[in-house]
Amino acid sequence: MTAEMMQNMSMDAIGMPAMDTMTMQECIEACSACEQACTMCADNSMADGMMKCASMCTDCADVCNTMMRMMMRPTGFDMASMQAMLQACMTMCAACSDECGNHSEMSETCRMCAMACDACRAACEAMLTMMRETETA
Amino acid sequence: MTAEMMQNMSMDAIGMPAMDTMTMQECIEACSACEQACTMCADNSMADGMMKCASMCTDCADVCNTMMRMMMRPTGFDMASMQAMLQACMTMCAACSDECGNHSEMSETCRMCAMACDACRAACEAMLTMMRETETA
Amino acid sequence: MTAEMMQNMSMDAIGMPAMDTMTMQECIEACSACEQACTMCADNSMADGMMKCASMCTDCADVCNTMMRMMMRPTGFDMASMQAMLQACMTMCAACSDECGNHSEMSETCRMCAMACDACRAACEAMLTMMRETETA
Amino acid sequence: MTAEMMQNMSMDAIGMPAMDTMTMQECIEACSACEQACTMCADNSMADGMMKCASMCTDCADVCNTMMRMMMRPTGFDMASMQAMLQACMTMCAACSDECGNHSEMSETCRMCAMACDACRAACEAMLTMMRETETA
Image (cartoon, rainbow over all chains, first blue to last red; front, side):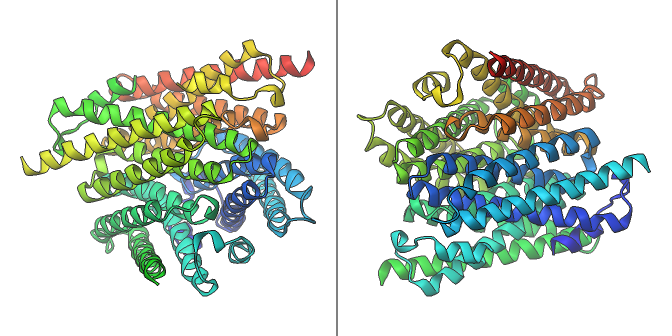
């Protein structure tokens, strides 16, 4: 339903051609999936005594939620803020994936969380590339 | 992936038989969908000058996100807190659905947001019923 | 500054006499303090291997933040939602205070977090009482 | 109490000398104040039909809350993620201050919100400068 609602919203304000909403939609979904994976992984890592992992995943969940919400608010869209936040989300996801990757063999939760972080980082990068192309078009 | 991760996590602590994780999983998904719908509807309603709707949807997005996260943290599960939060989420979703329902004919975004609120309220009620049955079993 | 801004906002919509904004202001501050205490306590408890405490504090931080924000949005004020959320916040703070209270002698962070939870629960109760009196007045 | 709790937490992990926790503490307080100002300003701007302002302030509140929480979680501290998030918060606060500044003469709420955004941007910059000096020390 999110995709359908997004298409009903006015994207004119943010200067994106219609075809590009798919890139943003994929980024929204990747952020949502990463927030969920990190929230569960944080809780599971607390239980397993992996303290650094639990703390980083808690950070990453908050960053991904904020990133997702920003993309869902075209009315106040600001190019510089969106780009800086995409950079922050990419950096956080890369760091969290590295940490979770250290425990992938012991913990299936960490293995899946690292995958969600990688997918989110890639989706943010695609979004950033698309925005830069739109800017210079 | 969320469903798969949830199954890997230890639910023993919270005293739920395996079959019931499906009810919780559906509630998690309904909360996530409602947070997203409310976030977009709030932004769209700001743009359309529907101020009460925008404000209530912003509240509802925060409530649904908190509700979702609580279900994803079995390590610190507390029966009374979970039940009180489910009640709060049901009440908020009902109020937000009523408000969005007022604009359903004018705004396709409001119509879909009201549907997401109704679905979330129903999923929270199913979760609450399941928890009460588990308690008395 | 929060108190000053709150006084500039229109409270007429939510039917509260001017004198009562002090009760709400105190509740906002208690929620903010509790979110901060719980966020720090969660991180510290992760590091100390107190897993249940870390998970409950993470929940409580989210609940308090949502509670705080709802009070800051008078435009969409809904009496039933606010009361249900105050109940949820009180229940969550009581549970979190109990858990942190178990470690108060070992951990100064837990001791202070339990105090913040108790203060938040009391402020929510005062807010709820004030709202019920306003309703029946 | 936040300042007192922060001093009890182990900062060794993040390589900050004791004197520098004051810079971080000021940044935490500025983020908290900005989240609160933006949440109220968003709601007030919805009511006043200033849609772009309402949407940007809602974004800024989420960014500031995430920024604040990251500083409160030293256990999973990651230098690159923290720096990128500080940059994102500074950019968002500058954009939000610009937008609110446009309505400062009409709206006392916008005027105070712009001040909170400016203070938060400055506090994040001081934090970033301090972190870079620590890195190269």
